[in-house]
Image (cartoon, rainbow, N blue to C red; front, side, top):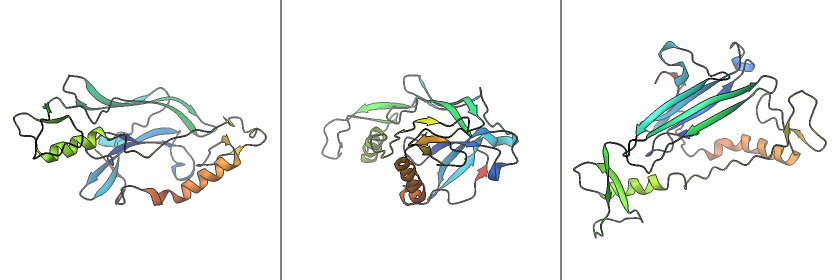
Length: 224
């Protein structure tokens, strides 16, 4: 998941690799698509943005998707770039290079950074400065938002730990003591039996750990 909204961690881009098997058997070749998850009211919706404006821009080997987010106060740009390095047809997998300069704590170009002064009316939460629009008084809401922006990544409980021994590219099977992970259709990564059991258990229980219970309350739409 690739966050793009400094004030709502639930607003993210997700990257999906679709292959011409199962429900996607009609597509010509394996390709990467990008979804935009965005909040409307109390619910989160997914939009397939690589199919906007009637164009079908699935990413294949050597192509990339670039989205500019905003301009920083210092003139720098925040962006997300997803590049498909290589597609592995036999293993139904893909190598991606993902780069992002998203920084939720950085002020945008139309804002100013105001240093907080000691005040009986404001609870600082340890925040030393806030990003606000020009010619406006700092409020407690500004301080609270800046605190959450600065803690944006620290509050994430997601950790990725790889324990793959190898990948069975040729269909010869895994080395002794290792098995196919089978985390998804066509997954031929070789892991220990304990690792595979753990992955299958996590997949079965994934619905229990959704932070946003209103997530995907609606059909997948096409557009921006």
